[in-house]
Length: 292
Image (cartoon, rainbow, N blue to C red; front, side, top):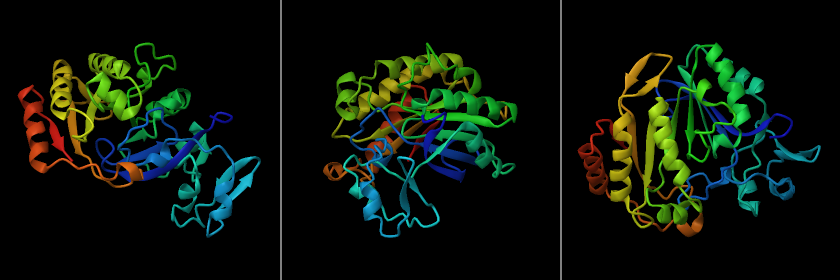
């Protein structure tokens, strides 16, 4: 954060894939995981304000202002030259915004949205921003979901997020700690604890696993994740509607789009293998399983 402002990578006014109903989706810059198959690796690192990308932008959409790289969305043609130039693979196409400024953007989309989802990068990098935004959204009766890798400690919840969010869409990268460290560079003990805590508190809205067979044991991950979800599967609730529903488990096919060069040759799973994984989850008692 810079002066209470967080780096916003993009805001999608209307999204039908980031939670229930029509939602505004906000993507923040910065992530503590280094997933090998990340489809948006340019959202992971934070710009170090070196300014090298300014010289290479073909439409002069970048400039340096007060020591910070700024971009002009009107001039920008999304050619990604800046990202290809960056030695850190970080996008300079961000805006630093506080909760009130983001709320102004959200207001442009009301009454056509049911709620708001904040993603990343990893959105819980900025818990105080999320708390402030969530408090405003709750006052206005808009649903509020987080799309998270589970690295924020919800048991301690130092920022007080649980009272202001409706739920979390939680990524389970791999169930095995060893595989998880190989896939992300980080341990998953906290992620697994968060699954249980969020489930117990009724805040586990959805669980997601991207399937990359050569990186981890997908069958084990789906089976153990489904078993972990099962005790809580009737507790997911989207408070703006009052609807109580099963926790959804999304099993997502890896696709080599947007990933870094050295990982583009990884082989996507077959449709039949995804169907097999779905059947494993259903056998463990999860009724709402979606293949993507």
